[in-house]
Length: 229
Image (cartoon, rainbow, N blue to C red; front, top):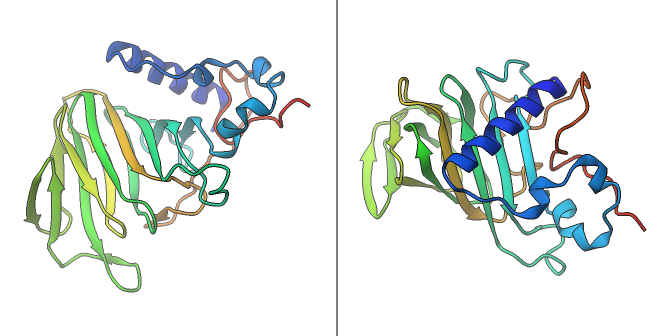
């Protein structure tokens, strides 16, 4: 993924947050130059992978398969004594025409909330004991206090303000209902680990390889330099 594409996506997500009055914490505004000067007081941002996360899933076509995210708070399951938070919160931005691939989580459960914009469609499948997709069995869905059952592969529409609970081992993907516009989503979950807790089907990458065609506007959550001593 080109750095220019990442910079453009960052600015689009910033603009969407401004439009819907989702104010971001200070570390989201630090420049790459500022990060070079920051010490251990920001180790939580580094070690819990807080901040910006732009991905094309290694497929090289961000406008069709991609997602823009910000991790606002998180713990670290590998360092529970230092970072005991058992929860995480994200903002997610999906443009109309974009798709976020099918996956489940072994560990975390999450609520996905439509915070504003268009309508998001979340397709759901159960998983089989061998972790393959179950294309046959009905799926039990939990949305805003309502529990109901839908056929495998159904798309759950979330309009602004609506949410869905995604349990462990539930396959799900994201797209935007055509004609409704870009979507700003919230995610509230258990502690998040994007390095080890995503099973994509079919397999894709999680973090992009970056072609440096211009300087970075912001650093991504896996790019922070070591603390200045």
